[in-house]
Image (cartoon, rainbow, N blue to C red; front, side, top):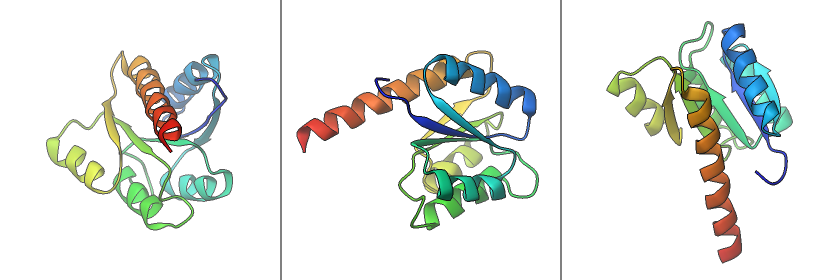
Length: 133
């Protein structure tokens, strides 16, 4: 990515969040971290990150409800949401995509690299779209 982008990581596991944060920072991105969905919504409204990486399994408010609320809000509805989760059930994935998430990445040993590639591809698509306007 050419310019620094801000990514909001929504993850209740500190170990997983810190690992992702380190990887994204090493690749030139600014990273914010929310422990749960309620905090994520507040942070997204305040900081307006370019992307949100959202876990589905969280206390207080799960990722599906968080995605739904983000997409309902005028302030956050256009922020791309990427689900990064251990859930692999087709129904959970479909529901997240129906609620407005743009991609789903299963948590595994390669999820960080897949996330980086997904973000790069999204940036390339945005760049092409800007040139066409």
